[in-house]
Amino acid sequence: TQLLEQSPQFLSIQEGENLTVYCNSSSVFSSLQWYRQEPGEGPVLLVTVVTGGEVKKLKRLTFQFGDARKDSSLHITAAQPGDTGLYLCAGVLGGTSYGKLTFGQGTILTVHP
Amino acid sequence: EAGVAQSPRYKIIEKRQSVAFWCNPISGHATLYWYQQILGQGPKLLIQFQNNGVVDDSQLPKDRFSAERLKGVDSTLKIQPAKLEDSAVYLCASSLQVPWPYQETQYFGPGTRLLVL
View 1 (cartoon, rainbow over the protein chains, first blue to last red):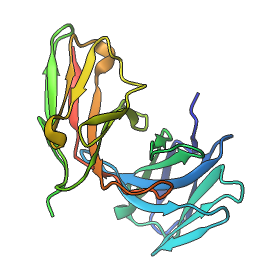
View 2 (tube, rainbow over the protein chains, first blue to last red):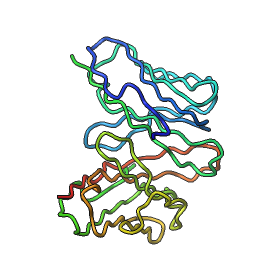
View 3 (cartoon, rainbow over the protein chains, first blue to last red):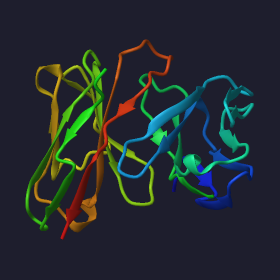
View 4 (spheres, rainbow over the protein chains, first blue to last red):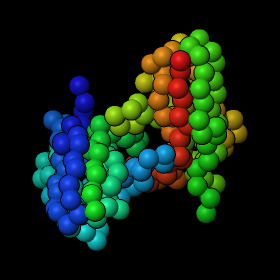
């Protein structure tokens, strides 16, 4: 059983479409991060959210942390082929005394030109 | 600034053989992590070092996996003997030490792809 459930697992869309990836848990997280991983590379941090209800924007990407700090979403507007990759959410459980990250299983996004 | 370096990038071995992976973290990063990423899954933490001490190794299969971080800099992860299910990407990451509850940024290396036949 995954502590962090991501959905969908696969997403194949056309350039210009919008999409949302979800990251859900029954546990409370003190912080949650989103990473993007390209083939043959390690994950690269996109954003960290720490406050319930927090919304962060990074160009065409919008990240939201749920009010109860149990879920998060990543929304991409007008997707481009360069957005193709594996998107991972990762959280630090509330009460953890050091920054141990628990990752979701990832969402593979393919954006077709 | 140089990133996290890992070697080798690829390794193919037969089951029951031994294998070792090397990681050189970003200079000055006190914390070093080893993750296992099986195809289709997110990374799973195997072991976390703070300088040369172990912070968390609760998910490290200690009967076959071992890791060390001598002098608090480079680290090696060893598997002996390897099993088919060890086929995965082994990622090393490092971060600066920041006071809890602040969340440090982990910087990942490119990983070592291990195939056990």
